[in-house]
Image 1 (tube, rainbow, N blue to C red):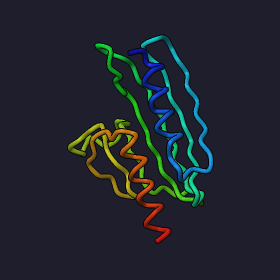
Image 2 (image 1 turned 90 degrees about the vertical axis):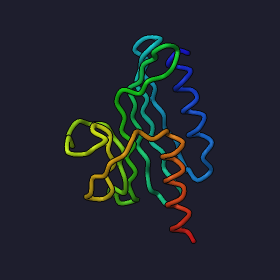
Image 3 (image 1 turned 60 degrees about the horizontal axis):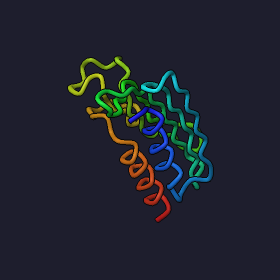
Length: 128
C-alpha cells in the first residue's frame, strides 16, 4: 500500500459524513511512502473538526507517526483534541492523550472513523 492509498481511504470516510456542510482536504506527499494529511470539516451546528496526520508505510501498512484531531464549537472553543505531541509525560498513554476542555486524559490513538463518530454523537445529542 502506498501512503496515497491510505489518504484516499481517509478522504472517502470524511466525505461520507452526512452532518458536514463543508469538507476541505489537503494532501502533501513527500514520496510514495510518506506524507501529510490535513482536513477541516464544518458541521451543521457550525462546529469544526481539524485533522492532521503525518503518516508513513511500513510493511505495506500505514503508520501514523504524528496526529492531531481537534474538535471545536462554533466559537472556536476546544471541545476535544486527541494528539500525540510530547508535552504530557505524566499521562500513562504518553505521548498519546486526549484534551477535554481544560483536562488532559489518557487515550490511545483513535481511528479517524472513531473521532468522526464521537463528533457525530455529540452533535446529535445537542440536537435532541
